Image (cartoon, rainbow, N blue to C red; front, top):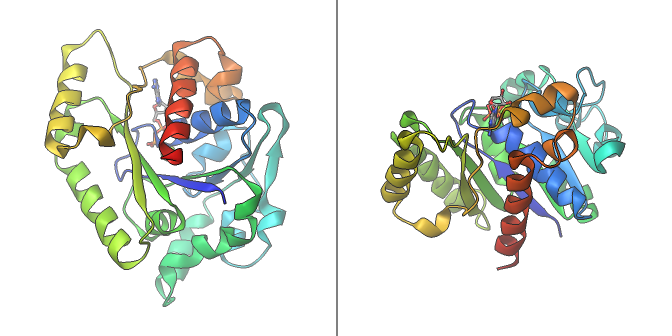
Amino acid sequence: MSNVIVFANQKGGVGKTTSAVNLGAALAENHHRVLLIDFDPQGNLSGSVGLFQSEKTIYHVISQQCTIDDAIHHIDAVQMDIIPSTMDLSAASLELAEATDREFYLRRAIEPIRHLYDFILIDCPPSLDLLTINGIVAAKWIITPVQCEFFAAQGFLTLLFNTISRIKMHLNPELKILGVIFTMYDSRTRLAQEVIEMVVEKVGDPSLFFQTVIPRNVKLAEAPSHSKPITLYASNSSGAERYRNLAKEVLERVKK
Ligand code: ADP
Ligand code: MG
């Protein structure tokens, strides 16, 4: 059965989408079968592999306008599959709000194809709305990217972890935190290191954090505009190297 991993953090701009596409590419490079699911109406994950206006998206799957097979796009250059999203998906959160089993739509949607992949990576919007909850309910693992900046040390991780434990208790008992990953680390500033120390202390459990830290790296920011993950766009950059390292850690952690 595939490892379904959701990228969740209600804060925007922390590196969810960047981590989803680049971890996916690093896993695919090692011949793992990877499916990316863009579950954010902003469609940034789709855009970062060059898909901007898809006719069949995750919205059409959720609203049963097409089968999940029809919505899977293969990206030759990186040997990954993706189910894209567009603004339509924001309608789904309104439509779902009425349904009694509204938290389970994505989980049910991916059931028929779960066995086809080693990893299914779900990218969520920057909120704790019904879409994110669907993402977390569909997953076995959560990865939370945290940007190395002052506001990371504020209360929002606690809120996220409380939400995760409630979802685990009521909706998805198999759910586990795979790890928190620090992103946009700037080794030239003392602040970045201080933020890491503060956040780790606040959370209290160092084993929840990946050893790999993602540096602030201009190539990582440029890659999406070339429709490529970092492993293709700048294969020898520090960003590519770190996401390959993260992939190794992920493989170790899912085995445990
Ligand atoms: P989220 O999905 O959490 O909103 P993104 O992955 O879209 O965050 O990242 C926000 C912005 O920061 C994007 O423009 C992205 O290209 C850029 N970015 C992400 N990670 C890095 C990094 N490690 N170094 C430099 N820029 C980054
Ligand atoms: Mg995003």
